[in-house]
Image (cartoon, rainbow, N blue to C red; front, top):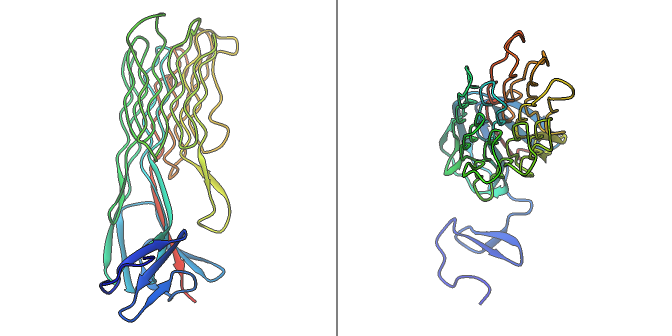
Length: 305
């Protein structure tokens, strides 16, 4: 039988890749269902859709519930390691669904902060904090590790630091469905390794330059395509080209260089959940410490007219 024989009101059933809702009389497709009205966050519109963007914690209150919403929940990114050839921070967990059922009630929204960068040599970054909407929790990004240390697990994992061939130090792992692992050591790696992103794992150092952060994911929930949740970059080893560029899309932090490379790292972009860059080994740089991950964001969209 295609549908349950004795459903209760508001039960949802998927058949043939389409969600249906029991309205007390019959099964109704989610396509073209009722409109909603709500308050909370920064409100914008795109065509027939209303968009609530939360860049800080708050409440989304539905006076009239649509039959489904489209959500994007991104946690805070992990911080990059301190200035010792370390790894970049992992992106915060990335979760998106275009058909999520809500009711006429208030939902608490939590926006995860980005983790702090490592403030001294041999210091880890800090993990990012979780973001939450309704039953949906995205996990904070893993921290980047300094030279000779393992990185933190998270929504996406942090990049490990420079190490020796055959050591037992590892990159941070990502949460399935939310992100990817950080970059790990390979033979002849001299720099730190990139943090994982929402779309791919962090890159390993290929010599003196640090590894790139993994790329972020695109979403058009606001009406235009935006990439978010990229990994932070690992630090370089020597001055000539010894620092890396961020994950090409998504706002991950750049990393510092090695000896003589007066290049400061950068933080993950605000409200993208991207990882922070690892610190610059050269203490003569104006700000050599590891940098913070970007704060998270929650965006909810639904049909309102």
